[in-house]
Image 1 (cartoon, helix red, strand yellow):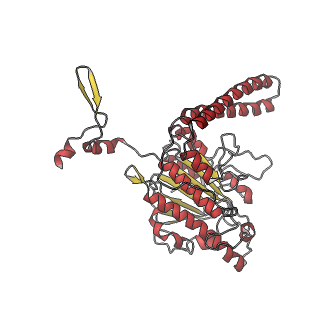
Image 2 (cartoon, rainbow, N blue to C red):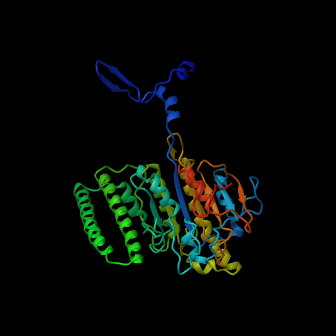
Image 3 (cartoon, one colour):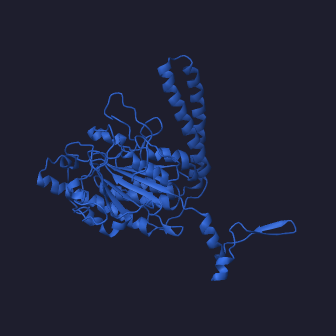
Length: 418
């Protein structure tokens, strides 16, 4: 053993002679040297829950590492050392009820204002820096086509994918040669159309005022970004998609959006495991059916406005417990997934939270946050004073640094969360 550790062979070693060189195959003795050279990719998964959680059932009554689990957290006890429950945080100048969701991953102030203009979300900022390393710079999922939590640099919401079946097929099912050729043709035709549109818009820009010119400049930037994405996609179309050892994923029945949420989490896990992307956002927008009570129907929005009615809270808890079971299933699978010698969970900063701390009163303070993985020290209830907390964007700075971005600022955040 001593001699093996002393004599290490580098992975890039070549055998040379008479002007010819040949690379070595993988050898066991390369492992110690390789371990010091390779850094596992860092990933991010962000989940926004539109109707929040009933926090008296979520937040522990005490803080620190010895907290007593709340009724909801009892469902996640097997993962206690893999996540942190955070209370007390909010975004400064975001007190806009349901409209606060626009600012959850951006931190932009006053989202309900008539003059509001959103900013880039954390996932898209990260995608600009590290998205080039994967087939898809970022994936944006939602359980409803009308809701997105991902925003580009102009503050425009990006359309989400809502179908687990369609997303799975796009990522893992290869088309026929004819289908691939058709897709390449469509991409090339799209690029040609963009060229013509850009040329016409340039002429138009010369004849409009400063305000419209600014709008056109934003449009030009969007066109260029789309064109770059299309060029990138064309390069991948003819490459075979990765194989995954799972059954094909199919869409759930209408109303079963808790199940849809779990399936989208599984597609996200598979995509990150295959390194098709390292950045995923997922918006959960409520459900009328609960997996634990098949046949029962719920009105999630009405239940979220419970007004402390005990019967409504009881029904609401059924839906929220089932949602947390899906999150627990995601943690289990991430824990069991190998990522180059470590758990995929350890390399993935995973956060599930809400833009309202109390959906019944539309309060946007004391937001519920569950943070897992990401190489952080977990197993605690991190409780901040809700009357004087650090900005939530400090958590996003922490996540960006986890992904390798050299920044100490995002939105209202000016440091990492401590």
